[in-house]
Amino acid sequence: MSVLNNDIESFLQTTFNDLHHHAEVSWKEVWTTEYIKRLLTDWGLKPITFDDLTGLYVDIGSGSPVVGLRADIDALWQEVGGEMRANHSCGHDAHMTMALGVIQELLNKKIPKGTVRVIFQPAEETGKGALEMVKRGVADDLDFLYGVHLRPENELPNGYAGSSIRHHAACFIKGTIDGEDAHGARPYMGPSAFQVGSDFGSKIERLSLKTFESYSAKITQFQTIGQNPNIIAGKAEFSIDLRAQTNELMDALIEKIFALADGLSRYYGVPIHLKKEAFVAAAVVDREAETFMKEAIEETLGAKYMAGAIKSTGGDDFHFYTVEKPKLKATMLGLGCGLKPGLHHPDMTFDRRALLAGVRILTRVVMKTLESFGKGGERHG
Image (cartoon, rainbow, N blue to C red; front, side):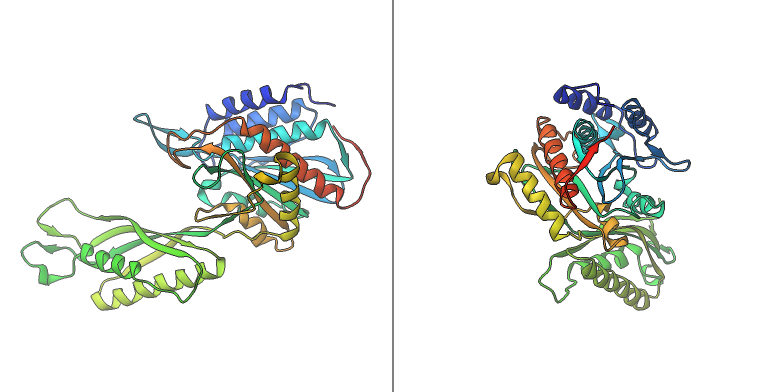
């Protein structure tokens, strides 16, 4: 069947508003999953959901090749206007809206032979949602995979688009210092956890790897355990944020951090325990997929507005699909949309007219990819 709503711009704005005002945090995107499922079912499609996981996917067409489009669906938990709540400040509401817009466009087109699989993935913000989808076989038969992410205006001007986003790898480490408390008047009885943590932070800041690639390491949280001001705390909890341009560099950086902790533990005579809480892989971009994306951008916006590869120190678990499935050809569209003040800012806004541009580019890149495997096909839906 054809999509009933022929006014794509009106559909995009209405859908975005619905999703924006029903933000849900990672692993709890129940309303969002049901909302998308209901739309797809109304359009005559057969979405696939999971008994133990939010998110879903849907296939349009059949057979090979299988070209995927992934949209993340979770929101952040942050203070907005003095209230702690779920908030779509990373643009996932826009990503879902564009993916649904692409489905509308495809249902009204003569699709070449093959399958388009649209994946609505949960829990991107945890760095683990993509891995759960991979674990459930969603990517097993994919040949190509495309994604999209809004870009801040200081990274990409409104009206421009990038053919790939070269995200850095990110790793978040939780740590504890498990020493003994001492009396404030007797500091010689044992090292202060704050002293140990301060030394650790200083060594992390001076850490040097022999590379021209970019990386960073910093302690982002530190809390001694105790309430009395006359006690020298021996215990503390802390967090470390690591970023690296490549996955190989991240491996080396993690190894260095663990070695520093081991050395300090022996020097001060106190246990220091580290645990990797989350890891997001660096971008692995396929040249052929990126070429299709470049052509789709140029044909939609004009060559002047094709920005090429966008480098970002941020991370996205989209890249786990290619890490886990090395033969998968993938790239992510970077969409300039006047986004400010910045991603993850509680008051983030962007030019919603960019939604239509994103739909047009993504529809075109999916069609180009299918057509590259040969002409012909039939109308689906």
